Length: 184
Image 1: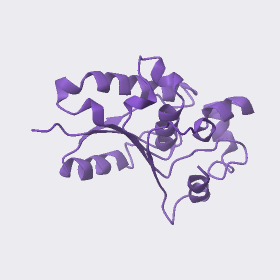
Image 2: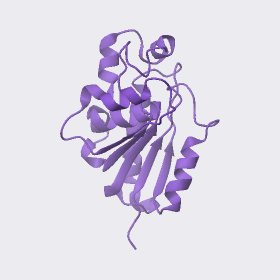
Image 3: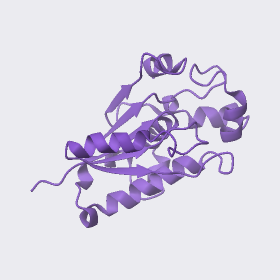
């Protein structure tokens, strides 16, 4: 039997909420496992108690663990897909594009077969369309330094050698999310 791919799902919640109330990860997992995929639902330390880059470091550490645990759990380590919703889309994209997060665990973006983002956040600048009206929230996660936000923005790290991306957004999403997705 061929081992299934693994989809690693990172929840949203603007970096400050878990997925406990929304259960988006659970629904994604339910749909994907019904199609034969293995799914891991990740949690990360939340802001404001844990500020950037803690969340991206948590995602990278989980990917490294899951990559190495493939034989134990029975999925194909060569077909590891990283997916995320909203802030989780930001984290999935950032970890897949900024090689330093995976490098800290002896991995590289080439270890990710592809990235799927749902209503992700890709531009963290003060005038970024998805975050323009969330100044206090952004400061609680990323601080005030524009250079930190620029480095934390997935769009800063886009290269031709990046894993393949599927970028999704919804017609009735939060204001700015579709624009941000198109620009990304």
